[in-house]
Structure formats: structure tokens, C-alpha cells
Amino acid sequence: MQHPTALLFVSALTMLGTPLLAAPPTVAGLAEMDTALQSGLQVEDYVTGTKVPWAMCFLPDGRMLFTEREGRVRGVAADGKLIPEALFEVKDIRTGGEIGLMGITPHPDFAKNKWVYIAYGHQEATGEKDARGRERVKIDVRVMRLRESEGKFIEDKLIISGFPAQSNHAGCLLRFGPDGKLYITTGEMFRRELSQDMTSLGGKTLRLNDDGSVPEDNPFVKTADARPEIWSLGHRNAQGMDWQPRTGVMYQVEHGPSGEAGTGGDELNRVEKGKNYGWPTIHHKQSQDGLEHPLAEWSPAIAPSQLLFYTGDAIPALKGKLLFTALGGLGGNKRPGVYVISLDAAGAVTGQTRILTSLGRLRAIAQGPDGALYVSTSNRDGRGRPADSDDRILRITAKPAGK
Image (cartoon, helix red, strand yellow):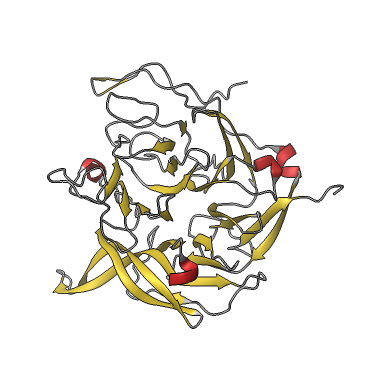
């Protein structure tokens, strides 16, 4: 039975007098807890006692790296033991609200070059004072390339800077795509007009070479008054991104305009070169010629965070599925967990369900070299109710037969 509060795609809508086109097939209902799937999972603590782990990744030798939003890059040895000291601490970090140390990803050729990329909020003094005599600071989001040296990481190269930034809607996820290029999601810091402004890096997906230069085949390289780094536009605050292994197509989840334009409106999108995903011209269930509508939309908000396609063998029931974490949204009807999305051959959503719903706010997600699924809590970010062991990184596998 279809959930009565689900916001589903419809055949036509009108907003502000603009005719909207027929929308895509509906996604049936809000995702409910899959008790059968959940009962077949083994969930164990992998790391405990961290503070707001934002993103994580694995190195070729089996080590895990993860970021803590306060500015630390942490490491877990291949045997699962947390390295006590930070491997790197960001200088001049800007924290507060949602901003801080965010995305992390290794270079595809890390085994040779030892490069890891991080995204973070940066602040520096301007030398000026405000009317109250306080030091003015300039804030932006940056991507830095680090290099491993003697078991720690050191700054190697500033890849890009100048992303618009404030406490909220700062992005910022990093991933290398199947083409070997670095992709970056950026937020619009509650300045919705930036998402359609081609002179701004806010509210976009960016695509760069590994040294920060712009690929010659980016869609707007030859467009006047457009930043050549832009791959797609019209985003609000995407924080999840991965590529479907079978097709090589990018999928993203992004936060909808709760509190700005109704409630909810969280999205799953198939993101393609040069396309416009509509914000703020369209949102929620709306569709308009020349703008891309979402594959799925959730209202009330679920606050989707990070995304992957699961390809491992440790959890056979999830193989080939699109998974994303959800912080749960604000207000009384929170729906956190890991969302399990089924897609058909054409990439349309054919089903959704939810697991790991009792752990509070979930943010980072990664597949380990052992095929296990790794998920982090974000219960100490000021919006959750932390348990004594939070924040945690959890390791999820299928229960052994007979258990």
C-alpha cells in the first residue's frame, strides 16, 4: 500500500506561472524498515570514540582513512586498530554548523604517488576589523592534495580554492571517477542564486585533473562567463556521489529545500555532463523543459548524506544495489538509516527500503577491501543524541549461516 504522506512524481505541475512538463514514473512510498534484511546482518563496532567522522576511504594496503569535522585526518591500520594520533591536522580550519574538514579520497595511483585529497573550510585574517573591533576573516572551501611521508601526511598542493562558504551548505564530497578525473560537489551556502550562476563554483559538480587543472573536454570550457571547472549545475547541497559499475553513470543524493520551499525535497539524481538540475527554479516534484528532475524525491526530509554502489560479496542481498546513508532530517519524524535502492536497466528506481535505523544519524559509507560495508554515525554533530560509544564507525556483513 502506498504511504499517504509520500511525495511522488506527478504528471504536471505549475509553479509561479511556469508550465511544468510531465514528470517521470513515480517512486512508490517512503522507504520502510526491512526487518528481514536487517535480521540477516551482523553489525559490529569497528572504531569508537571519534567525533563527527565526515568521510572515509580505504588505501590499497587495507588501511582506512577518515576525516573528523574538527580538522583531523585519522587512520585505522589494516588489522582494524585505530591509530591514536591524527595523521594530519588542517591549519586555519573553519568549523561550526556543517562546515569543517569534509571529503577525503585517495588518488587512483596512491600506491605510487601517495596522494590523498581533502576538502575543508578555510579561514584567514583580512587585516581589517568590524565595527566592534573584531578581526574580519575570509572564509572559503578548499581542496588540498596531501602526500604521505613517514606514516603521516603533509601538504603537497592546493588544488582549488574559493568555493563560497558559510556555516551551512558547504558541500563537499570528493571522488575520482572512472575516467581518472577528480569530481567535487559544492554547496550554495543558502544563496540559492549561486546554483544557476555560471561565474560561481557554488551549487555545482566540478571536474578537475589531479593537479587542479581543467580537463579540455569539460562542458563549459569554451563558454563565455562560465567557470570551466563546472561539470553540472543547479544543485543545492549534494554530499553523496558514486558511479554505477555497469554503466559508468554518476548518481548523487542532495539535500532538499526544507525550510526554504516547503519541507523535504531531498533528491536522488543521475548526473550527466553539462546538465542543469534545476535548483532553485524547480524542486520537489516539479519538472520543466531543459532542467533535470530527480529520479526520486523524499518528503518529509530524510537528509541524505553519502552514496555508493555495493559490489562486494560479504552481503549478497545488497550486491548491485545503490546505498546511501541518511541523517534522518530535522523535526519529529526522523527517518535515518541506510537506504537500499533498486534500479532497473534504464536507471529508474524500482524499489526502496531501509536498514540500520536504530543507530541515529548516519553519514559516511564505504565498501572495504574485505567486501564489508562501513558506516559512520554523526550523533555528536550537535543534532543527534550520542550514545557513550559515539561517534562510531560500524562494520556490517551478513550473519554466518545458522546464526
